[in-house]
Image 1 (cartoon, rainbow over the protein chains, first blue to last red):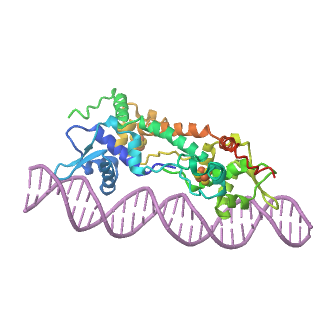
Image 2 (cartoon, chains in turn orange, blue, cyan, green):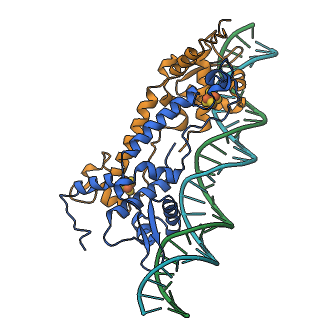
Image 3 (cartoon, helix red, strand yellow):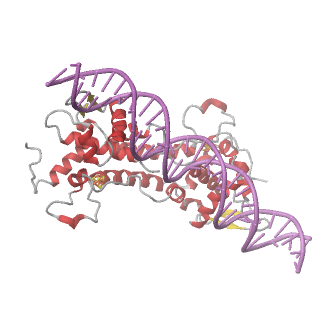
Length: 163
Length: 163
DNA sequence: TTATTATGGATATTACAGGTCTGTAATTAA
DNA sequence: TTAATTACAGACCTGTAATATCCATAATAA
Ligand code: SF4
Ligand code: SF4
């Protein structure tokens, strides 16, 4: 029950992209150095993000990556789901067990009527939990973090992106 | 980002224990058959639950397992944490990267002052999400599910545990 | 064209979930 | 006390996913 390192990298890469909108795009080299991870591996992650419309990529000289949409429209949930996949947290395996009969109540009077809705009581709880989590993750975007970082650094004022 | 099958089994085992308080304890054999899983594997899971004070176990003839405390005091969070471990969902790896400097703000004026608190903005979001999840899982107990199951089955009335 | 950069596939490595087997210890019935 | 029963702990195997590297190819700009 842990997020993968890939998710970690993806988030940091996006934060970097969102923070340095100076010209246009950032090369994989710069990203890899900044995050402290190999270019090969990071490029895989960036590809996923591109395929899902989170970033745009241009090959060739002076190519690189840029955010495909405003940073405040890229939620944590988006990133996590792209990298980790969209499978749900709890997926029951043994729907044939005796337990199932008791809890999901498919074998009684009502028959198959309720088969489509999430009638299983265990899954119902788990699904609710997942919704809670998603709701929170959806309310936090890349921009959220950038804003907070800038706010906190206002005293220091490094003038890093004035250039 | 998925719960393991072991968690699935643990939950179902506890539900079975909570539901059949007829005499005292239920043997691993009955549990395994009910859940449709091997005794060997299930016993591992039950051991974990015992070590954490969720269930009690007695060896010997007519031995078996029983809940160590009322079913309404065993939360989903308890079970999950016992089986999955108590590691947090997001655990940062590269605290040495350049990214870290920007986001965690350890290298500026304030120095190491804020090192102990969760000053990292990424972790802060993830930690918040985890809290949301935990809060929900803590509000749902084994008893919750059993109650709902009984309530739903009142029309059918199978008299299964009259015996 | 040529240098540069991202992309996709193939491959290696490692970690771990899932699962089995076996011998041992504890308990009770006889 | 003996024997049957049951849980317990550990060693062990296996398949799969995460992590990571390498290379050949395609696309782009100068
Ligand atoms: S009751 Fe729910 S979780 Fe249990 S076996 Fe049936 S579908 Fe799966
Ligand atoms: S900013 Fe937070 S998540 Fe990023 S490297 Fe530092 S501690 Fe880790």
